[in-house]
Length: 107
Image 1 (cartoon, rainbow, N blue to C red):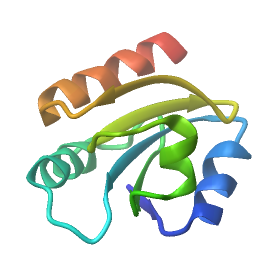
Image 2 (cartoon, helix red, strand yellow):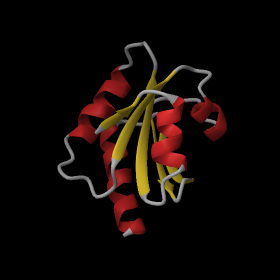
Image 3 (cartoon, rainbow, N blue to C red):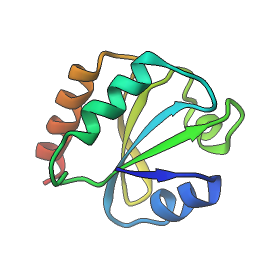
């Protein structure tokens, strides 16, 4: 899993991408147990079919406002730079199941 460190990284890897990608949004500069567990579960996926990125953003970051994300962790699947599906604030097991389901829908 790669980390998107800036809004420009997000734009380059997600909005300007013609591929299918997944982004897990986490809380910036704060310890969030759900976020840490979600990252741990998603990192454990060997050779992910859909690339996964982490974006740890401040509350006022462009992607959070643009996508109207109010809860972390949130996993969003993008296709051709457009949001296709998301799951928010759930346990990591359900997040991994959602990710696996999205692989089957998009491939």
